Image (cartoon, rainbow, N blue to C red; front, side, top):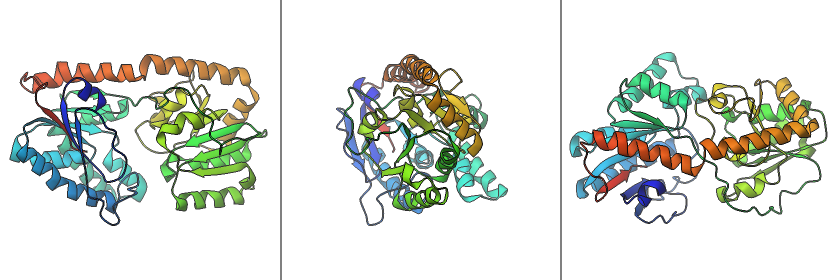
Length: 369
């Protein structure tokens, strides 16, 4: 939204109840009502999210009826809302894809093949109804192009969330080297794999885990106790996103142990910009962005995770080399400037043309979620 608003577009955004107002000039923010039970919406599918989406539909319809919109940017399942409203109001939409919904649900609930196929057809219908698509990684770009051959698709990788000088947090100061994970603790993130690998690794170190719900933290703390490393694993719980740089400054090694999924974890870009070496699983979710020049990639097994931890703890020269090369890669490919350049070219050269070369500047661009 910041990029488009800075270019003069007027944006009317609808989002969930939680979070603060980013106060971006040119952006009018509306939220789903904070009804009982509709806060703390977890990642992935949930009844909370489905309820919020159901409430969002009439909110979007009301704005489209009263406003003069050129375009809807529909994030994830909001594409189905935009698809349903398109025949009524004639406003085209861009499908903003951060993950594959059928894949996400199948990984979480082990859906039968017929249901996964039905969801895939629905996702394909959302793609074919769009005027264009934005994806967060190359794997999703391939997926959407398979659904809708000929649809313009632009991959916009996430960017680092680190900005400015860092202030060491008082709750993250340890004498031993720190191995750090930041993010949610859903099963697909592989944090259990990380703890198992840490328990097998050699060398004195502390594993610091930031994020997660109380129930997830309790489950992983129990695992650490069972493996005999509870005294060397610190669970700090959720911390503000704007302080990610402060916490990463306290790490010696950063880790992304993800075991499932197609999209690259957002945290990877901040990891790469942190000046710390990155250890990650050698899976497509990572290798579409990472390579052996900027990260130590390991197989998703406790034994290989342990090998990676031990290698980085014992080899300072390798740690420094990986961190330096990663920092340069971020500056070249995953900076806010690179994001702005890619988005601007896509909107001006592709989407504006498909909107029959109408000038978007004096009108409104609507972000559905």
